[in-house]
Length: 134
Image (tube, rainbow, N blue to C red; front, side, top):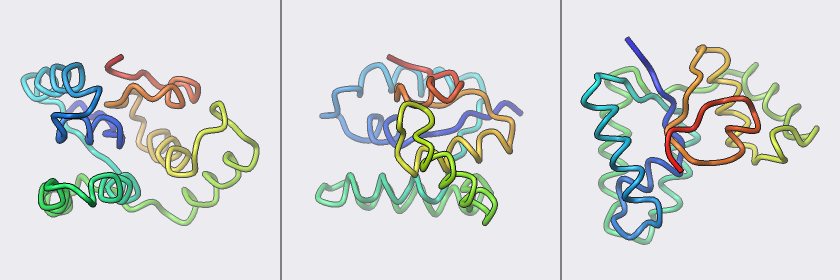
């Protein structure tokens, strides 16, 4: 089973037709679905999505995806070790001074050996991951 990490940028883009990345993200999303790739993410990423879309009609969509991902075992709860490692990298300013949620994502991706992210966020490239749309 091939897995790709879903970042906030990618998820928000496919849910929000008004997002500047809607077209490229949606094209990649459909390609991933067609090839049977499984998207996984962390609870922290979904928190970011929930915050980003809190004042839109997409609140229900975010919650529905959370429920589905939890049920399928695709929503990762970062460990205490993940948390501590992410804060150390954040403090050092790694990955072009990425934010803390991105650092948690990087730690989880490394732990789960996931080299690709459904995003165009340059911080993922700076951390050594492949991003799937521009």
